[in-house]
Amino acid sequence: MSKSIWFFALLFLPAALVAQSPRSAIGGDGTLWAGGEFTDFNPDFGCVHSNLVFNCPDELYGPSAFVDLNVTSKIGVVGEARWLDWNGRAGQKESTYMAGPRYRLYRHDRWAFWLRGVAGGGWTTTPHYPQAGSLKGSYFTYAVGGTVNYRLRYHLDLLADYEYQFWPSFAGPPTFKNGQEVFHNGGLSPNGLSVGIAWRFLGQ
Image 1 (cartoon, one colour):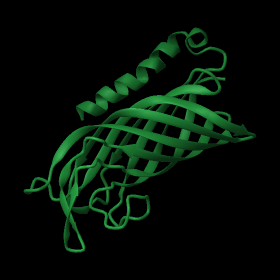
Image 2 (cartoon, helix red, strand yellow; image 1 turned 60 degrees about the vertical axis):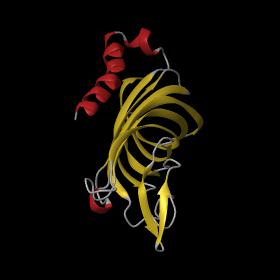
Image 3 (tube, rainbow, N blue to C red; image 1 turned 180 degrees about the vertical axis):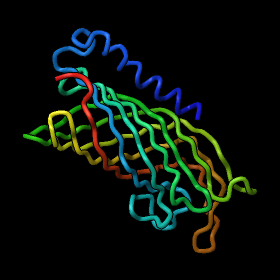
């Protein structure tokens, strides 16, 4: 709970500063957006098929939240949080809190396509924790992603998002595939899709 409070305090600090002086803080092209999504992720742990989304029977579901502060019409920063607590096998969970730059690659009419790179922290609970051979811990994470926005109204966007994460320091307990022990010492690469909405709070 404490990490969630700290994350949102950091995210909404720019909003507070912008509210004090919108013109000087974000400029003529600056905007502030915030929203929520529903997320489907392959956790890349304990999945016998592949680490790609929609290839794991125990994929993780949950809500995501984000804040986008666009300094110009093409360049901005994003902060995001994901809480993937549902459908995990035997109590498996993953959550991440990351932030970083983003860039608008394309825009046409109501459509816009953004790319981003973010970094931060990831928290995971492996299946059957706290039994022997399971674990619960936090790790450095980074990710690349892309978002397609569709303008529904002047202040409202519909969006679809794909993100590929890297947990380079993860070294988990072994799992079994076809009766053979599989070790997880090469990090994790969770990835998935999200759909949601974004609301513009500040800017033109």
